[in-house]
Length: 278
Image (cartoon, rainbow, N blue to C red):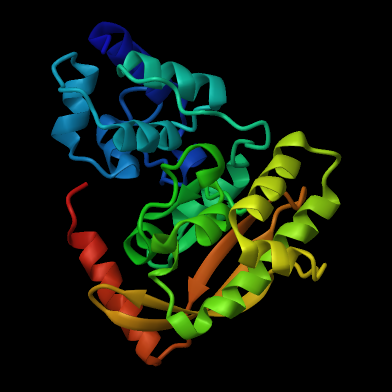
């Protein structure tokens, strides 16, 4: 861990960001350029004191998960993110050819959804960004590497990925994920990474191979999901996909009808998120 260089890099990147870039109010009294340290701490989800220590060259080594959260909060591009990992004493995560930064406008919308679970999903099932409510609802989906960055890969190769959904819903999720993945590949130019992802899935999962051979195609736009939360129980939510212009990324938002049991569960979840240290 290179404390002096890490502190300098964090400070310079923080000062280069405007509050409006991350969905925060500008305000009228700002003595320094860019974001304040406490604002970055809120975006990262860490204590202000812990972040201050990093910029003051006094902090302990942050976890890889925390480094990933800092990279997202500071809107680092892939090269900057890799540099941050190295300064923090880690190897940079494997970067797939398919991965692209989240569009700034999409991030601004995501940052404003404080009481609604929302996350960005690519056409390969990668989840490069979540808000705090989505992490509380679904767990952190952003720290995976290699093919595991794709939730489709994890769904068909890792039984743990299915635990948040009722068993009776698994067949439905399997079908729509395969159909959506095929639609995504159909929009792409020839992509060696995407092709290898599919070929590896066909070899690793007989279930995936069988569904792929059906040649079903369907873009996921609106769906109902039942999610098994460890503390709040079964939550039934509407999932709305807002497709970005390139169609390579979507903003997935989880909502519930006002007055419903699910709306009350989201309210309780939001209160718990608000009580967590930032």
